[in-house]
Length: 440
Ligand SMILES: *Cc1c(COP(=O)(O)O)cnc(C)c1O
Image (cartoon, rainbow, N blue to C red; front, side, top):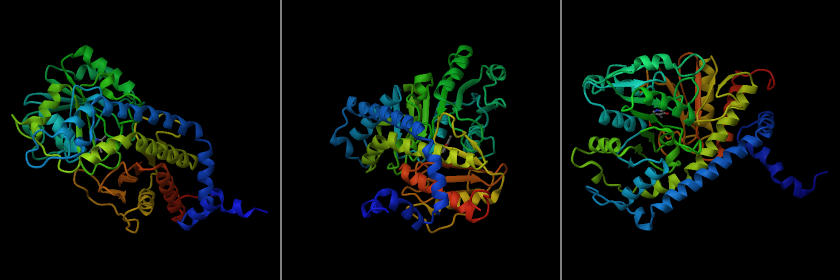
């Protein structure tokens, strides 16, 4: 017989609490079985977070972040100490000469568009050696016709797809480089594709191959979702510029808006002259009241990213065990926080996303449906009950409703929340009869 103390112990109350929140004992137990095999993986993730925490702290200390840095400016924003210091912190962190970290950069797509449009001139060519870029960039580049695209300004675009095994097609990459190639864009994360994410090491190999053939080309890395997953970042592997969103990893869930560009001084200055105005550049741009969130979010980012990574690994192992195709697979090393699960069934994509929504701290009672979102070429279902609208470092899932009916899952400000969300997706799939076998 259990003592009263044992009954009140955490192992006694936890399953009951899950049950109270709609997770059946079968689903909970299945999750615990999977989790028992992940101790080693989780320990490694924690070690990377520990390293990156020290790295962030060192960048803050070396750049003398002070209490005064937390006060913002208004109006033109001249001599904004906090903004200027934060940009130095980002530059140190990413081993860059300079950085632009601004609330006026509205999202990741904007940051990327800014980096491209400010560093390319009419007659130049943009080249992607890693296949099709993220969906929203198709209109920026002009792959899909759009007003104000690079194409409209006379910048052409070329791409070489990855090989079937995910490798680089070096032969065709070499052929594609020409006298007009000015900027090479390399997307670290898989985005809405089922290709592997690139490690920083592989990005380095690609850049050195291209550099040998064309030394003057600008190598830009779309760093979205990759920050703090590894101990190194792409500039350390030879990139000229890294670009990302503050409502993903580096904002740590606290940044309410923003994007960053870090890299060679000239590249960053070009971006600043485009963001504000030629002649003004980095000197203006009031930080208003966002700086405490930018600093504190960056400080938390390594551990928030680690929590999200644990969630991704947990989800991979759960759905792999149930016989679904998962990318990356349960044991693969990780280079971003995205987990793709391919269901080959639109209903399952919808049920998965509705499960994530039901687990949210905000708007848990709403039921997301697929819709024609601007920037995407098919209906997309998105689940996010986030404190910051659309933030995908918070627990979120989205899937374009088109074959192969894959769902992309990411985020979780805490590992515990990510775990609950994943169990909720499973519970939802079971309830809808979309998973047979062990739960029937
Ligand atoms: C999210 C993302 C973007 C675009 O960022 P938004 O903030 O959604 O505009 C671009 N590239 C990749 C790889 C992304 O993951």
